[in-house]
Length: 139
Image 1: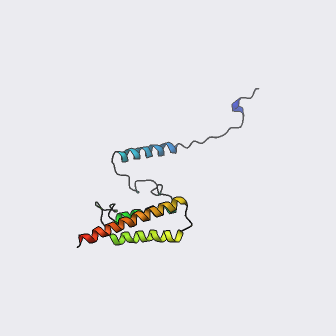
Image 2: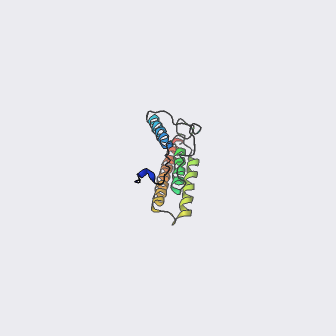
Image 3: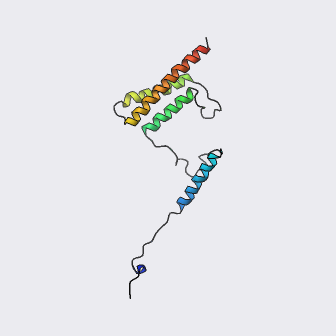
């Protein structure tokens, strides 16, 4: 009897059908966000930690820089409708970035070094300008 392709060893193929549901859910979320609907809260998501950024130095720099910008009054903080200026807090976050700069000097990738130096420069210049404006309002 001649061998047919089905006469050989049978290989069981498993298909991951879940990926289709995940893609559809991501598409639906993107469409809702584009339409202006609020993003789901972590309790709505099956895994609230699935969208965390990578744990690396660039993320840490960006996180501290964002906190400094919020304290400078450039961004509204969590739970705030309007930005609130908190110069001492802004200075603290800028100083923390300065500590990272000092302690990691010579051990950064070119991207990390550029991100840190540019962030520090911009934040320091903005802080000085905001401090001048703030002191000018009280005189």
